Length: 76
Image (cartoon, rainbow, N blue to C red; front, top):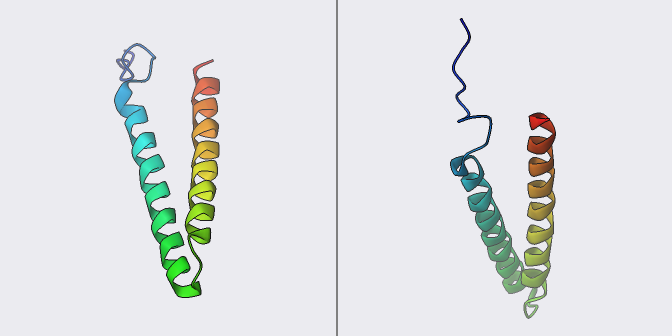
């Protein structure tokens, strides 16, 4: 006997990717807050907040692309 397909026909459902959006938002929020904290400590006017935002966006986007490419290769 074979096991039933738990993936819903081999296609990933929306719940599988919902966590990626939450990860994206939380990472950017944390880096923005850390940048604001660093700006207050160093006395800069938003420099670390901007750097944190770009760093979080770039890193999370890179992670998202890698994750989606891995899922795409696994389905082949």
